[in-house]
Length: 230
Image 1 (cartoon, one colour):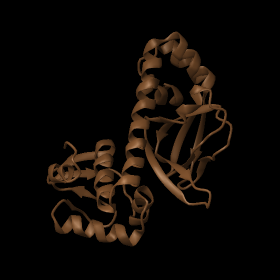
Image 2 (image 1 turned 180 degrees about the vertical axis):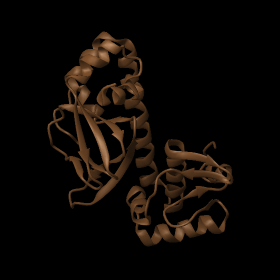
Image 3 (image 1 turned 180 degrees about the horizontal axis):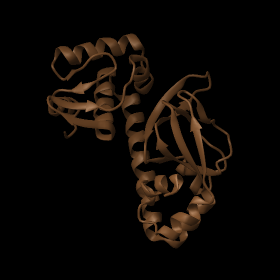
Image 4 (image 1 turned 30 degrees about the vertical axis):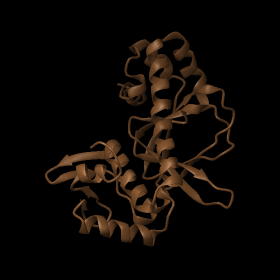
């Protein structure tokens, strides 16, 4: 099977497409490789396509006027990003960068729009994707604006467990390695503050792990601390 077709077929958004639809779509796609920490696109670039992560991991960021980066979301293998291009957005509003070496499939937005018009399942899947990602980002922004650093960190760990959690003996391991600086970028604080807060969570028995590996040892108590369900 053609590699691009295989990657398209394994995308949640496109799983219900027929073989003929996949074959037609594949002819218009481009496969691109990115090393770790490479820009994929910048704000104000033309929003003429969406991207599927064939392998690897990318992050969606907001660039402030003074050049600081705030990470809004991570996108893993099998997921798409840049989907706002489908709704008549002419320019990108976000900055996207590869976290690790990644293979991306670039899909012209016109082709997805045509599928949305013809296939209700595809249209519903796109709507669900946009809604879920917006919900995650809005929750992240709300915690940044209205909660303490500790609450922000706890919310973040729970969000990452939802998206990247792997059940192991002794808890939930985050299948994503993040430095304290990267966590600080996610919750709008400093690396030093993150180090102190992570230490407190370890002392309280809520998390464990070494270096960039984080295990949520007591996810029920962690969720309870911020009023969420485990």
